[in-house]
Image 1 (cartoon, one colour):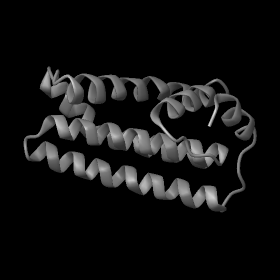
Image 2 (cartoon, one colour):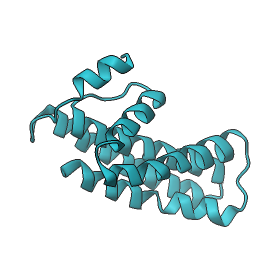
Image 3 (cartoon, rainbow, N blue to C red):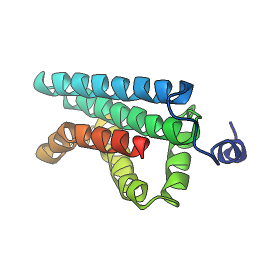
Length: 144
């Protein structure tokens, strides 16, 4: 979907309790399952896989927020980033989340998973564990 198409379709909030709400709930459940998997990989000593799963949980939760607010699900990460940034222009609570989204993308997905730069390990582990806080906050904002 083009940027224009996403923006035009996301101008109004979908009706409560409809298909968008069901899809958002499914995305939040997936985000929580991915976070659980990230913690299991962290406990197994595989920080790179744990970091990627935590990033995926962050993205799925963000997609849930976007679906809840717009009725449309982003197809790929660039669309998630673009739509999250657009929503942030109208909502200061979402604006505060955008920095956390970008930090997870950069440190967990880019640096740790792809490049193997997982130092300091305590910081990456904390970011993985705290992903659930992001999921909780995004889910709360989806109901607003």
